[in-house]
Length: 270
Image (cartoon, rainbow, N blue to C red):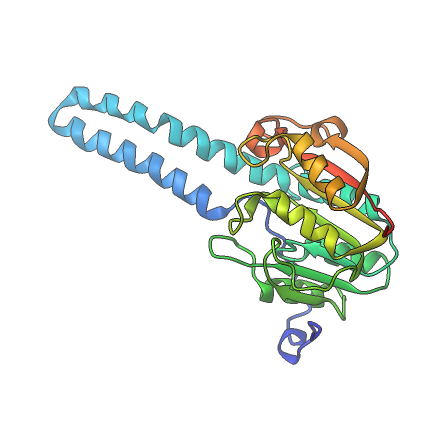
C-alpha cells in the first residue's frame, strides 16, 4: 500500500498546521441550532398576527438544549477547552506501548495514529470509512501526517466490521469511539472480534468506546465476553470518568458518561 508522502502534499505551506477535529459531528451542531432558530422564527411570525403565539417559542427548548450540549462537548474535547480527546488518546496509547506494527481502527483525521508514529518508529496503519457527515477525510489525514513529519503511514479505507487484513497482521490494535458508529452489522461486538482477529497472539489491544451505553452495547459484560471469545485477555477495564475528571456535559451518558476503556493482550494460539 502506498505511503502518504506526495508532491502535492509536500507543497503545503510551512505555516500550515495539522487539523484534528473532535468526535462531535459539526453537521449535528449546525442542525440543532438551525432547528432552534427555525422554531423561534415561526413563533415570532405567528405572534405578528396572534400575539399569544409567541409561546410556541418554548418548543425550541429541547433543540436548544441538545445544541448547547454538543457545542460545549465539542469545545471541551478540543485543545481550546479541556483537550479531553487528546487525553483519552493518551490513555489508549499508554496501554499498548511503543513497539510493533500498529493498526488504528477508525483513525479519522489521523490524530491518534500520527501521535503514536511520532513517539516510536515502526509500521503504522490507519483505517477509516471516512463516510459522509464527518469532518474527516483521507486527504486530511494524509496532510496531517506530512505536516507532523510522519512518513510511511498507510491509510486504508474500509469497515471495522470487515477489516481488509490477514489474521495476526498486527502487534498492536487501538480504537477510540469508533465501534459504536459501525452501521453495517447489527451487533457492534463483531468489530471488536475483527480487531482481535488481525492482532497476533501476544499482541496488545486498547479500545475506548461507549461500552456502558445500552443503546450501543448490551452491557459492558457483553463487550468483555466478546473480547474473551475472540481470544482477548482483558487486563484493564475502567470507566473514563474514573480516570479523567469530567464536567458537564461530558458526564452525560451519550457524551462521555458511558465511555469506557478496555485493554489487554491476545492469548497465544492453542
